[in-house]
Image (cartoon, rainbow over all chains, first blue to last red; front, side, top):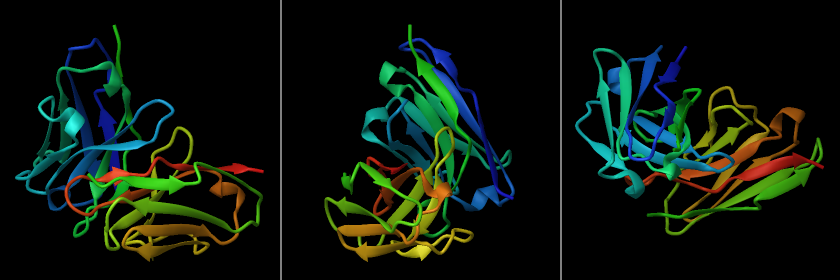
Length: 119
Length: 107
């Protein structure tokens, strides 16, 4: 069974940093692209970032470019999102999601980690 | 970036009703469209991919159609478990975007 378990969320001040982790199990992690998708309180889904299976290609939505960094450790079956220069508008539940192998829609999702940016 | 627009934003329906949700893309995305269901406090769940392919384990009352810029998600006979919010998502290119969501409420 595919499982994705996020951790690392919490309360951070504006301008601060947080690192989210997503531990994967139940599939060959190194074969699949992975993504982060967020959802602000009471709002819709927003794609944040995606990393290819090897880690060689990364993509970001414009609002986080230069502030967030997606990475992965295929030896640890873990996906990361380093979030720097946090803003109030980054407050959201962050989901990690597995991308289907040949077409990058998201076929499995974690339960989410809440990030709150507030002073 | 490709913009996705769903309609309606909210839909009130009864158990047994046929329900249709529309999603329009700002430019052609061929059939690179997925539909997700989300219940309060839960992660999204994939229903449909490539516009009309049913994900394994998803009930056959769900169906998707369309190509290019206009797509629909249909629930043939609404069940109590189907009251939720539905999102379309395009995956053409390298900037994935979601529609704003359609909340299906009990009438």
